Image (cartoon, rainbow over all chains, first blue to last red; front, top):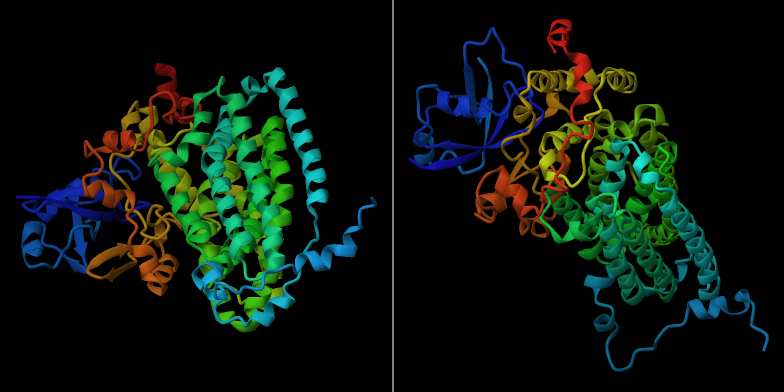
Length: 87
Length: 498
């Protein structure tokens, strides 16, 4: 378990932001931490959305998988760009 | 003894030069300072002053200007006009003083470099007057701000800002380090004299002076106008320099121009765009930022480029598209991060202001209105804490400004380079291009996010960042109107319940 900084962009917002996530976080938890800075602050919640989706380097991530797997495989570095959107 | 008339001696005086015997010319005028490059020595015979001035003429004209500026200042000190100013406008003058005074100070160093290292004595001669101009500007900003200290401590930031880590100041300092202090004479002539001063300061000094006069701030308007008369004169030294370079190394001239035009634009989006379209009270606005840019910057640059033989920068179409957006991004950003400012920003989105924004920027509602709607809901539901950003924005490694903030929410995209194993992010493909062309020039610099992650900011939260930036409670930014503007968006039921 370790803090891991990412540059996260929530689709529809106007800027990406620095978000501290944890290597033990699932992608569902990563998405929730990212959404905290946008949904209800600059974007309204989407009542039709079932949740959030995380995309890294054009790959849609499994919400149950943890970030640490990708970190261990060195496929993601600190301040990596992560996209999140309503699913 | 009768003095010679200027024309009797000027041509001899301007060519007065040393015949070096103890050192090589290259040692006395190193290329890293002069920027001479491939230009042959004889080419500098074609460098012709755009204006002629002697020390006697200069002092006599400047004395008049100083007398005029300070006469107005003294009269207004007694009139207490500050109390009558709209608080939104006050933010403009505080932002200007804090972000500009030390740029004038940096410009003294740049002009002194022209005095010492410019490749022709004609240019070195005129550098003296440019240096004296810039000393005057820095001192004027300090004197006018000092007068206002008794009214508002934020004016202390005229002197203080550049000694802090305030994020906007870091971005400005980085830009002027690049185009003034880290630039050789040729770069500085094109990047600063031709592009920033000739191309863009009109918008800072002419447009803001007009808006300040309308807002009743005669003092600030008087200051800006007095400075602009100097800027428009000494900025002309960029023309003969670029004309010489265009004959011998046009590719380099074009590159310097393309880099400095984009970096200048990003800065003026941030400072002047927010002032003109949000801080200036609605009934006192003369032109929108975009209208002023199109008339004073775009038209002027197109003419200048045509006359000199420069091409439009390769990103010209994107620049035109961004005129509709980037300053709205910077405004929403600065308002959302208002505790990191040393002025109180006006949200500027009352129904009447919004109607004006939509008339000037037809896409405003779709790009910006939807975001402000959520902010307004939070204000009216009493969730002010949700209107203040809780984490740092991703920052560009060239401009040091938020990524995405050059355009709008439909154009946010990842622009990244890897250099010597380190990732660098950029606000646009233009800033990425600037970095990729010359990575060593920018790679050593760290932005606020990187300094945060390196542990320089403690505690590691927004409160720690604000403290690290030097903001104290008495100057820390808050909404200029204490959120009263949002009340008109409340539902009739909510209003009735109050």
